[in-house]
Image (cartoon, rainbow, N blue to C red; front, side, top):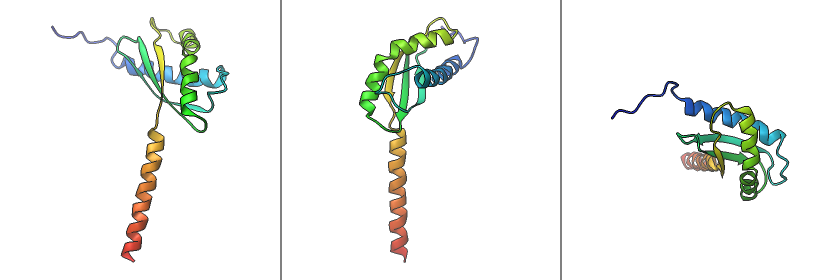
Length: 124
């Protein structure tokens, strides 16, 4: 049997995007946990049934493990804040994960710069 097409295509992406924007504001303005510092929400992935959301974050300074613990402990508070802002039937349970993409990109840039420098020395 063919799957029924959604009347609103890409709704999951729009919901994830709105969750990302609202969480950024909630964490910056209302969350008072000292373990959570300057946090940037990188991405949000929502399950098709909107029951769970993986929230990927990065941070400038501090301990990412302690920050993840603080965010996961505040997940209920943040979910309640999302419930007031979002107008959907089911607000997902939030699961926070530290995103190492920016660290990996910086490491790759350093390696590339090192390779280019060594290559230019060899050509001289």
